[in-house]
Image (cartoon, one colour):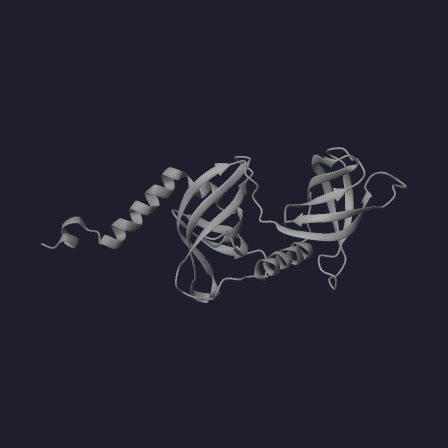
Length: 227
């Protein structure tokens, strides 16, 4: 009697079951639906998506944007996935392989949990652009010039000569490139660092980000990686 008849399983089935059991032990399925940034092993962002139908150690990637730097190949590519779990209130880092499946669906497989911590979860592009901010909820608040130091889909870092308080909300208007369109982004101050007397750097988050603006920011980050 052959091994297959004796045990009733092929080597592939045994491997798949072992992988699924490892994934269950790591409780990966709690991350189904999580928004992730998919990056190469050297930190270059390929795409932004949501983990859909996560079962065991594999899922589909539902793209959040049309901006994709990954080649359309059926060969698996090793990647890191960075996301944020609102359930655990912390950043989540996974590793796996991504390939293009049937029907043009991106698949992530062999997922493993790397770590969960409070690290910054979004890739940022360094920049040096002039913009203006105007306070929200303050009638008659004057516009103030600012300098955009870096940007991600989660927020921005701004340089200003005026002191604001943590929690202050404002509207940022900036062009990411000289020829680009003017973006209007709602922001909130999270961190303040006084670089020198009369000059401050502010870490700010986007309380809400329109899909069109997210697309523009991602395209800017992808282009920055190419430079």
